[in-house]
Every structure is written in C-alpha cells, then in structure tokens.
Image (tube, rainbow over all chains, first blue to last red; front, side, top):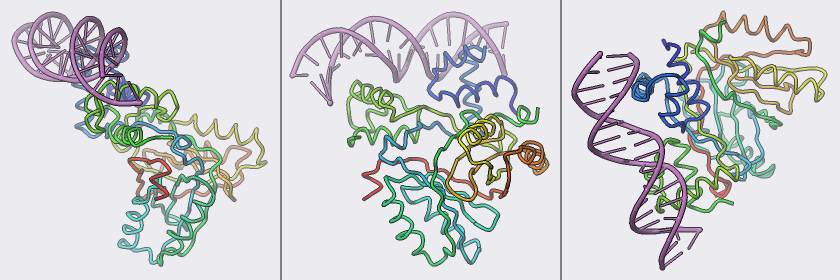
Length: 156
Length: 156
DNA sequence: AGTGAAAATAAGAACCC
DNA sequence: GGGTTCTTATTTTCACT
C-alpha cells in the first residue's frame, strides 16, 4: 500500500499537480531526489494515473449541466459497450457511468443552453433504438471532492 | 471567448497538466513566451481553475463505487446547503450534485467493500432527519471524458 | 531506500518587432 | 499580440550512505 509519505505526495498533487518537485519535497519532508523517485514510482504503480488541468465549463461556453439517466434494452454486453462508447464520444459528455439499477447509465453533460440540451436528447439519445427510457435532471450545483484519500484514512 | 490557440492550450493541458511550457508551446505552435502569457491569462480569466493529479481508486484501496440518489425534505435552501456540505465533508464522497428532479442529490462514492458501503449508508445517510429517500446503485464502470472542449467545437 | 552535489534543462523577464 | 535572448531557478542523474 501507500506509506505516509506516498499518501502525502498523492494528497499534495491532487491539490496542485504543478507543484515543483522542490516544493513538493519540502511539503512532505523529504529530499527532492527522494521525492522524485517516489512520485515516479507512484505513476509506475498506477496510483497516479495522470495530471489534468481543470476547466470552468461556463468559461467554455457550456454553463448548463444535466444528469441523464438512461435505460437501454437489451441489457447485453454488446449493447452496453456500444452505448458507452457512443456517449463518451460526444463532446457534451463529461462522464458516463454504467450502474446496476432500473436505469443502466447515468450521463453527466454540459451544454450551451436549453435548446442545445433539447437537440442533444432528441437527436442523439431518443433516436437510438436501444434507449428505452430517459430521465433528464438539470444540475443546480455540482461539486467534486478536491482530494481523495486512501482507505486507511477513510475507515478511521 | 477562446481563440484557436487558447483552445489548443486548454486541450493539451487537460491531457497532461505537467507539460512543460516549452513543449506546450511547440504543440500549439507559438513561442514559449507567448504560451506562458496565454496560459497565465487563462488562469486569471478563470478558464483554467486548477491542476489535479488523477488517482486510481483501486490503488487507494477503494475499488467499490456507488451512485446514491438522495431525496431531502424540506427542500429548502438551508437544508440543501447543509446536506451538500455534510456530504462533501465525507472522505468517501467523490462528487455531489444537486439536481432538479424527484431525487434532489446524486452522490458518487468510492469505498473499500460492500460492508463499508452498508455502514456509510446506514450510519451516515439514513440517520439524517432530512433524508427521506435513498436509492443506491452500484457502479460497474465509470468513465470521465479526458478533454472538454469549448462550445464552438460542441455545436459543430 | 534516502541524500547531497553537479550537470542538463526549463522558466520567466526584459527587450524588440 | 507575438518572438528572441539571457539570467535565474529547477529538474534530474549519479556517486555515496
């Protein structure tokens, strides 16, 4: 698992992925060279999977978000995989989740306005044969947790 | 809005937030100094809101995810804000969304195992007075879109 | 595994078009 | 607004503990 130093590195980099190695080392109390080796190991072990700039959807001209619950039938592997690929291929999609439940997918989208959302739903969702149900909920507020911590910290 | 160069910078940094300014400049075909000014402006304008390392939930010992739909009553500002703050304060939470619909919130959580999820629900959700309904769906697959593009690109 | 010092590289500022 | 050059700072390798 992750020791205290690894956990600290992961925590700091979730807060600011552009921290210089020097500053990061200072924050987690190890030498810069050690810090570099640790961080590289975390990437190679697949703990850190990437570094992403976070953008403001409003600034991108897409201030309106919605959560779309979709039921597809038949609920088979081929249909599920094809639908997921289809959804992730659309620029409006922020995330898509395949879940166990009456609705098979929850899709988070960001669009320019209500008209855009309407077109998205009518032209690209309800036109699909496998889509048997659609529940669209507008998003008032959406928050992501800044830093995710390892199990040990969660189960305290 | 964003011109083509800004859009390219935003795209590249969503892919890899640790790109050096030099490499970034090469990819978007401008001089390093120009690129530096552009990127700084994008931050100051609030287009780029941060740089985050992405971590693997399995590697953090939290391989099990669920989507929890929650109804709270009364559906007033105080109750909504307090519940949102409460949910975001929990280490299990990945994201929380306040939506318009029969369910007021959609909460995405990652936990160690089913027992952990059961405890979370019974000890920290159903115990809350304002929570009047709870629908928990296990997550089979969860995908985020790597790069979000500006409206112009979306409405093509 | 962790550290310190030295060489390679990039960031950032000032200046010019 | 964009490009070039130069100084300063940082990254990264390597020999050592």
